Length: 346
Ligand SMILES: [Zn+2]
Image 1: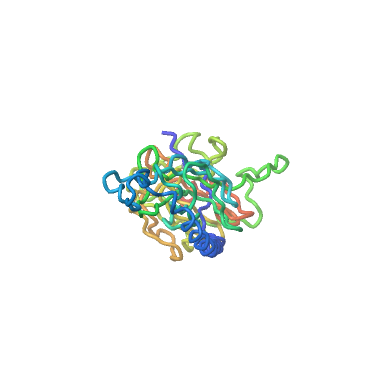
Image 2 (image 1 turned 90 degrees about the horizontal axis):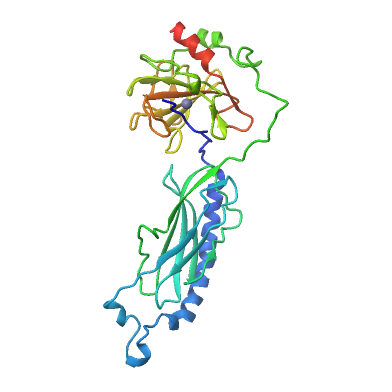
């Protein structure tokens, strides 16, 4: 029942990604030079053990009967790190009778499915742990990633992936925790901030309730500010049945849609014309009816209520932000007074 969304830190497009790609490309060029020399010097290390006895046995001849592939025997990636410099990653590859293998490490954004960082390590020695040297200036924005290793040896045998050595690890990059401000508590919900539209003002602007169907506000655990592991609940849950239409409360523009497996599930963010930002989380799979840049009016379909992401019952997790959703200087406010006004006014 205590359906929840974990703190949804923005998974935002980052300008730094492009810079990181450019740097990765220059590193790759350098790696090519390194690879050429390593290839020449290591060719003696890959001969079959019987080469000296067989006299004429040429490189690779003995492999036909017993194909051996490189294996990632160790891949150390922290499960979480903070946005910015990529975390320390160490890895080790092994392959019997093979001295060096050509290794590439890629970091894929699980939301966009795109490679955020690609580092060609070149020919590295087997049997020892090495630390990945990230390109200078490379950064990882907040998000969920796969760190994956690919490799091949001089005989073009590529990485053998098994359940215990897949060569892939998951990394979650979190936003740095803001400095605590005990002397500046957030204002009580009954006292709207100056410059922030009041529930009555939003109603006068035509606001409608975001769930078009039977619903409830649940219990204390569904309230804004309810304690969660390591943070507070930054929205109000609106419990409803799977498939109930979720609609835009006010006119505005969709600023973001995405998927977060460990938190919001399928979600959308609207920047309203009145300045408030709305976040709609846990949409049913395949139901998102909007995309970034799209204009909406009160009642425009956003998605259907569901329970994707970190949720155990169908509901809309609804957030209101002042100063931009997840933006520097932006902050969430208690949505309940707005929801109650819209519930009775529409
Ligand atoms: Zn919630």
